[in-house]
Image (cartoon, rainbow, N blue to C red; front, side, top):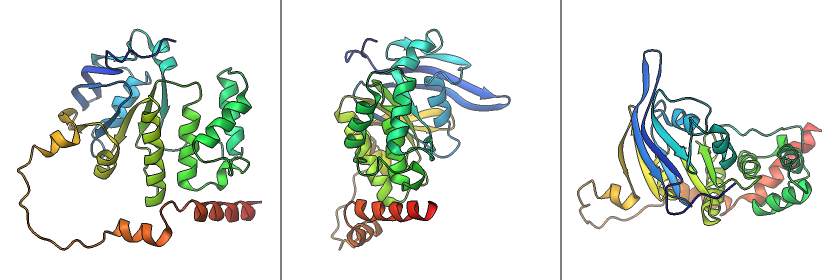
Amino acid sequence: MTATRTSEPAIRVRGIEKSFKDLHVLRGVDFDVKAGSIFALLGSNGAGKTTVVRILSTLLKADAGTATVSGFDVAAKPNDVRESISLTGQFAAVDEVLTGRENLVLVAKLRHLKDPGAIADELLDRFSLTEAGGRKAGTYSGGMRRRLDISMSLIGNPPIIFLDEPTTGLDPQARIDVWQTVKKLAEGGTTVLLTTQYLDEAEQLADRIAILHKGTIIQNGTLAELKQLLPAAKVEYVEKQPSLEDVFLALVGETGETDAAAETETAGKELR
């Protein structure tokens, strides 16, 4: 499969519309996603974010408009699109009975790749899951399970990955772990389309942010461009108090990985 050309958008959406009976979910959506970038589709619940992802991943047909992914039309060449992408839904799709490593090996075998064990070991190392690789996925913390889910999506090196609200239901530390994982994906050249309802998540991760509201994109730009839409802030001296996030991270440590590992190991013993 030919990699996405950097001279053209990895994803191009023009006039996409979708209705479910009398409910008009998408009313003409337009945006481009640059190859190797993180693009955030920001909107509240019910804005149509998941519908956009389902159309782009060929799981749903649009009523009108066009979309190309990796240069392939999603309606005319769905098989080529599927070979170019990976989709991670809102809930981690891991087999909790299998170990983390066994989950990865299984997916590699299903994709008919050579040396699935080596692929699994490389991904466990890449996502800091090597020590947990031999434990059942059902004993993992939420953040570890999500990282495993994303690593499974990367088997076969798809140039484009869709992450549909990847931090929904995660605790603050697990969210930060996932953010770091997403940043590493883009640094490695993967194009990421991220849907989220969290303002701070879009602010932390995205190169460009599109705000989806009532079925249309009402604004699309970089964080700096979006901030320019409001008047400049009045400068005043204010004594800054620590945020709840500052307090939380100070108490549990910057990564919390040791505590998470201990917690999941204890949970594993209780399950056995």
